[in-house]
Length: 422
Image (cartoon, rainbow, N blue to C red; front, side, top):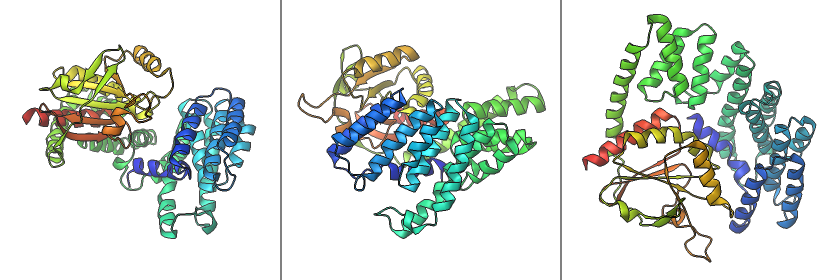
């Protein structure tokens, strides 16, 4: 199973809040604000207020309260206040929710380079707790069949292995790290998340297995899945063997052509033929923009948000695509940006990052509606989401998520090539 799917599934329980639709929207909005709070003690105040305002019951709403306690714990771990972190982690009742939050805390410490030693400690605790309850029938949540729970727990360990490997790698304990990194893959390594494959390739080389690292990287190249880190490592290995990287660049370019040809054939079989829903929105400069303005051109709608990590990660590649395809219209539509400062927040994000994107703001259907134009008509199930519209105004492809720059560029190039041939 692809590790990306595993990581998504691992978030399911803690996101499965047993509340009404209105309450979910309210609580989720509150939790999102809470996650941006820099003072962990203020997070405690916010948690208690949410429980009071929404009249959350300790039993009926235990999943939601778990999420609140987890957010407080994460706030404390960011400040290296480990006694308070452990206190709030211990308040999480659902055992799986607890290991999920422990894992998230370890990732936070590693990604922000706060404390690799403590990250390693709690990553190991996460694994120990997981193995302690995975076969416990009392740990199964209400609503899960025995079979579904066993299947879920069967693959939930993989992201925990991955985080522990990541922490060991950060501490330069390479021999241990490679063992856990291997266990983090349910299947062939090349099916894993790019970050994990990149780490594994580095570990192979660091533990004296340069040829194995090279072959894995070449396999990723043939699949069109190299990210920048993998490309740099492959070039380094090639330079150490041959001197220079000219021949390697030519080889990778030839592989990309093969990937493109194969991808075009695969995508053609998935092409749809729907009328793209019309819309008019204001861009961040206040100008009204309509989809009909671009009739006769290929249009790519990129739905994103300032709080969406994969969206932001995809932007360097999308900037390259804008420069590569000046005849294609790219419209970046900011969705689910809540609060009165939404427009200013988006403007500041674009100004800070210096992207040359044409950015539009999704807006309510009416002054009295809580529904928004783009999310209501295009109905994205997740972001980033890209909608590819041909010159005749037909929606032909929908792409979701982000993996690597190379995959995104390959897919976008292939789709544009198909649309130009229509």
